Image (cartoon, rainbow, N blue to C red; front, side, top):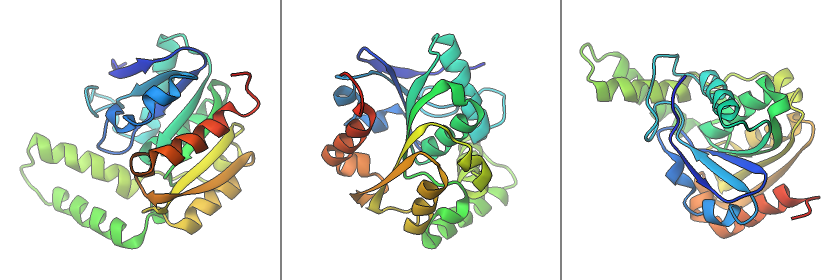
Amino acid sequence: MIEHYYIEEGKGEPLILLHGNGENSGYFHFQIKEFAEYFHVIAIDTRGHGKTKRGEKPFTLSQFADDLADFMNKKQIERASILGFSDGGNIAMLFAIKYPQMVDKLVLNGANFHPSGIKKHFQLLVELRYRLTLINKTPSEKIKRKKELLSLMVNEPDISKDELKSIKAKTLVVAGTRDLIKESHTRELAKLIPNSRLCFIKGNHAVARMNPKMFNKTVLDFLLENSKK
């Protein structure tokens, strides 16, 4: 088990924030304080990201989901709402599939359930960079890290349609109007998850940073719906 670095703020029901590939909890700079007015916000650095150590276990999205379960158990959090961005959204999906009893509401921002959901020009660039790490015969630690990060985008996730249909949590699927995830893929994701709604916000993949006012309002409206807060 690893020790996660995390930022914690606010009181109330827990809301866990999961950043994207190669990033850290600081990604949610424009969300933490505002969300903390309503929730006990915990923004985590996932395994091998930010200030959380890599550890010895597999560097996979499924392992990251298991790590989240370990973290919640350690913090004695029985159930939480989860907002995941990009690979963080993919981890959140896997977590909701593997640990449905631990999820309240789910927000999937710029998530994809298969690598084919990423726009071709971006995915081809990722695959090229990944291949370059594979042909390096004496890779440095920096190259090894890059290889693992790129591998997540090239080979993962691979979530089946039946698995998505099994998600029980009330879900918000949100993406930017100029997202690097194909619009058709985002629409299909929202269609496959039974109790979900879909929203596109003006901006690119990093819409939470580029258009935080609209992003925060959209997410809070969803999370606070039917709430006494």
